Image (tube, rainbow, N blue to C red; front, top):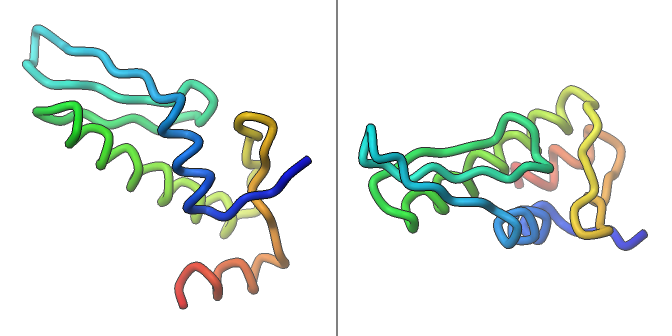
Length: 92
C-alpha cells in the first residue's frame, strides 16, 4: 500500500470532499466521509474548503500524537514514523 505525506493526504481527502449549501444559515458546509469528525462551515465554498484542509491537518496531528488510527484514502495511507519523529517532522 503506497504511503503519502500529510500534505498529500490532505489533498487526497479534499478531492473526495462533499459540499452542501445550508439555506437556513446561508453557509457552505464541507466534509469528508472517510475522515470522522472533520467538517467546516463558511460563507463560500472556497473558504469552506480552506477551513476543511486546516481541520483535517489538525486532526491528523492529533491522531499522530495520540497514536489513533488514520483511515486509508484512495488506497493510500499516511506514512508513519515513530511518533516522536513524525511530530518532529511536522513541527520542523
